[in-house]
Length: 139
Image 1 (cartoon, helix red, strand yellow):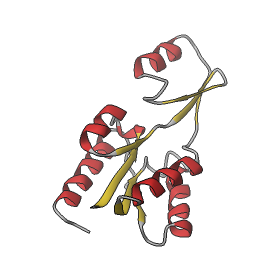
Image 2 (image 1 turned 120 degrees about the vertical axis):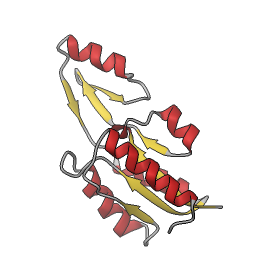
Image 3 (image 1 turned 90 degrees about the vertical axis):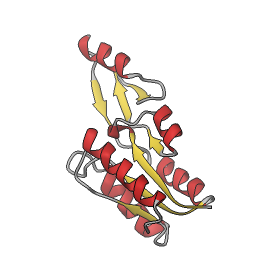
Image 4 (image 1 turned 90 degrees about the horizontal axis):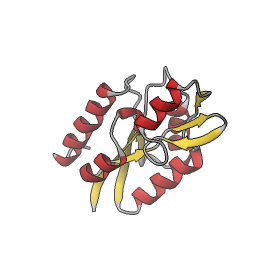
């Protein structure tokens, strides 16, 4: 059993495919476009997003469902001792704070949420660094 599962969100720039290759779980960020719900990397590609943006679609963001996040953590804890979740910066979304509360209230010290104040390329690097540390046996 692997000790630590690494989780991030799609704001890291890590695609679902890359996550699978790396062994990292990637939570897709939800978008509402013209009142229709889309999930980044699931039913909305970057090309489609930019196309809609160029054509003046009404776009708003949301945070991942707490139920979806907790369900993923529970699944990962079936095969891992701990989960390390690196979401987008708390300065840009309430998803980090929500995840921290869920981890503290529901997961008895088995889920750790890192608020590293990053997004995109620097968030991605934090995820890759965490993966390397976990692979080297860090706790």
